[in-house]
Length: 163
Image 1 (cartoon, rainbow, N blue to C red):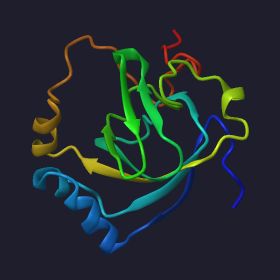
Image 2 (spheres, one colour; image 1 turned 180 degrees about the vertical axis):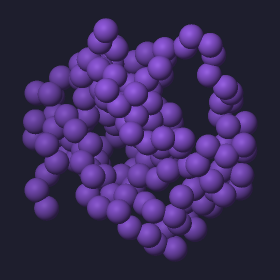
Image 3 (cartoon, rainbow, N blue to C red; image 1 turned 60 degrees about the horizontal axis):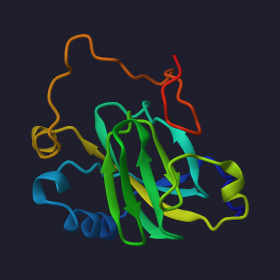
């Protein structure tokens, strides 16, 4: 396999696996496990610039790290960094700008990831069931809130919206 190009999270194929699904579901609270969709997807990256995955509608997105160096999934707009190490599960709103960066980095710098080891992840989706909404504190959108869509531009280095 050719290593993934730095700066992007590469989709490497969808699959269904009953054993993997049981293991994944066993790592989540029962109410959330019931919301996991059966299709899983392989992903690989050598760091990823800030982006949104606004094409995933009505779901939360999950990443289960299977191999590679420790990296942070960084959400610049809310000042949050989630450490993603082998075995870790991270669940987040795919509409929030996020990047996959080396630990303690706040900006994406492509040169840092040239020749870097790849992270291998299994991606999964959770339906926004009532239980998932409650678990993550998701309520109705506020009137006049900034709407993020697949065409919303994001600064690849900082995660700021480009207006």
